[in-house]
Length: 82
Picture 1: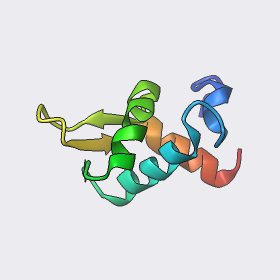
Picture 2: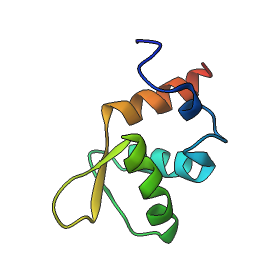
Picture 3: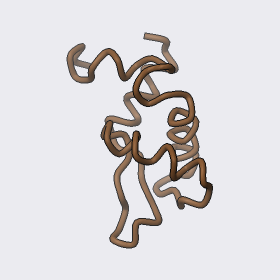
Picture 4: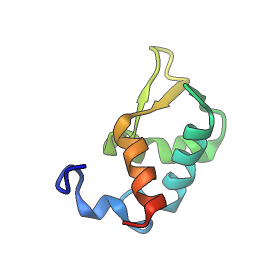
């Protein structure tokens, strides 16, 4: 992995994405290929996750998202506590 691929401020739980967004990303990963937005907490975290490039819309109806490679890398890096 390239050390400069993501800004260092994105890697902390208290950073720009915050703990609510981290929980959202974990739910998206646990949802499999797609995750249906059903919770209000999901909608609140969605803007940050989209802005960071961690999730992407699946289709035009804006009801389903998927974890991007960048989002998966982010969660993996947090799990390794880098």
